[in-house]
Amino acid sequence: MIAVIMAGGSGTRFWPQSRMANPKQFLEVVGEKSMIRLTMDRLIEELPIEKIFVVTAESQVRLVKKHLPELLAKNIIIEPFGMNTAPCIALSYAYIKRFASLTETMIVLPADHLITKVDAFLANINKSQELARASYLVTFGIIPTYPATGYGYIQAGEKANDFSYKVSQFKEKPNYETAQEFLKAGNFFWNSGMFAWTLGAIEEAYQKHLPEVTKILDLIENEWNKNGEKADISSIYAQMPKIPVDIGIMEKAKKKAVIPVDLGWSDVGSWRALADITDTDHNGNTIPSDSFVVDSKGNYIRSDKFVALIGIDDLVLVETKDAILLTKKDRSEEVKKVVEYLKQTNEKLL
Image: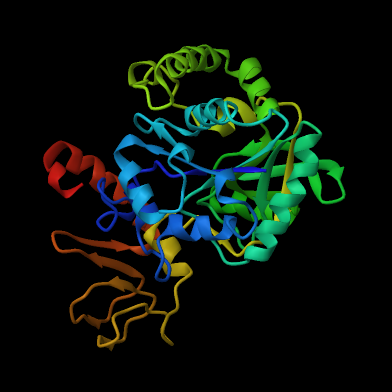
């Protein structure tokens, strides 16, 4: 088994703490280790280090080496720049197949997700090999615990084997009423963004469903053959379509399966998501220890300063040395609007 950690994201939904120079996956968002360090620690319980690869943007290679010093240099796959998951995964399998058999199972994992049930995680990635060897493209569906509107869903169809189902369809993020219907139906699972397949199966899927990507990969491989894996492929890679693997491959594939899992999982995709998994006081507040609070509940405050709260509920306040974010919890994902504004007005804050 080979594992690929996708670590090239910009983490815009965690501004102002997440910045271009130090995005979310390299932050100590949960506990005292960075998200990418936690991801690596889960994997090295099961896999030798030479079987673990990280794909990241060229600008983040230094950070990868800093946080994962044991990672082999040749196991860092360099994207010239971030595109989306379909190009990222394509580049990864093209790179890895130079060192591995096409029959090997490739596990694909985001670098910045929280998983608290590590034993269940390891057991399920091992189980996925049975499906991968049967040429399935496998995804892991999180068993939902509430009608979430912030996740895409996977609808399960008939059984593929005793622990998985054939995928009926993928669903975009629903409204609350639709999410309630999904939860009641019992055969819808949150899309975790984690996958498993053999190198041969995913290569065949790209050849069939994204042939334009395969042609670009041929050019990249020619460049690698001439100048080595560290060759400048930026002008070629820029031709890739910026699409997610769910749309480019998974929705089109015929032989796909979902394994329902309970992993203590969160994509920690916003400040509200982080607040939801963080310890609180008896009023639901996450606040500095010496704060002063009057008639306030459900607030998430991240600041090194003394904070006084009076009569406010369900707010997020995040302070850094040069910026402050203040938002209602249920609008915290809109921080990306701030990032877009700063791209036009003040890039020093990105």
